[in-house]
Image (cartoon, rainbow, N blue to C red; front, side, top):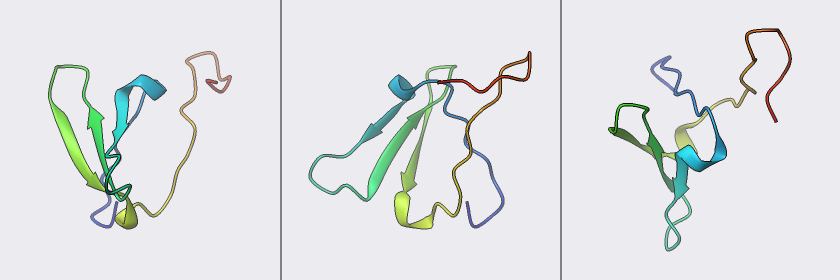
Length: 57
């Protein structure tokens, strides 16, 4: 994010793309909350690693 925040998405089921305006996403937190994200502000995507060092699929 432009402010340096990282928003972990542990599984594809934790993100929803707004169907009418594909620029907006909702990233669900594990505690029941969520972030609303303007996808045009996302500067980088990186796969999460497992604890044993292997990438998640």
